[in-house]
Amino acid sequence: MKTSIPFGYVIVEDTIDDYDFTDLQNDPRPTLGADQGTKPQFKEIAKRMNETDPKTLVLEQTRILEDYPDLKEIIESRFNLFIYDIYGWDYKCKVTTSWITHLTKGDKVHPHGHNNCFYSGILYFGKYYDNSTNLQLVNPLTGTMRYLLANRSIEEGRNPNVQVDNYELAPYTGAMYFWPSQIWHATNVLQTDEVRQSLAFNFVPTENIYGGDSSLFTEWITNQNL
Ligand SMILES: [Fe+2]
Image (cartoon, rainbow, N blue to C red; front, side):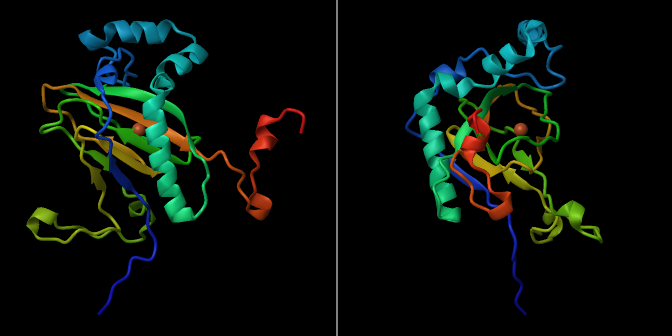
């Protein structure tokens, strides 16, 4: 008997080990999660975020990589290499938004997805990830199954099942992952005292997309005279 996996989501793991993350580790602009604003260490940031108008907030909090152009270049070039590999075309993808997350003891990332982007990614630039919590990519196929059979756990002897199991991304210094943006993700509660730092980002293609009546030429949306 032979089984096949005919469809799939392509996830990338890469490592950046030739960049000094010190400035990022000291960057005072983490974007707070929904339930972090009441924590003493985040009070000042929460106050600033509440008092800032939406456009300024976007530019201050979610364009972090604009202040790290060398790192942005590394991330975009690695991502475009991957895209060329699976599409055979250089779509010259660029990072749009990028933002810092600091997870502290008792915090977790609630399930969410990223919109208005093609792929998303994360870079673990912090110093400490021992016993940290993994990022869980929520299996998008689970909700499409007509029967959801009860599973034994893998610990009880079940084999991994790509139709229902989530996929875990382990944080370690320099680890970088890319995944299709529609995949929701979350973490368990962080149990350790060390802050779990990360930088998340989104990509969009900037080359024209040729696809008949689904084509998209970038000049159509950037040139006001067309
Ligand atoms: Fe996210």
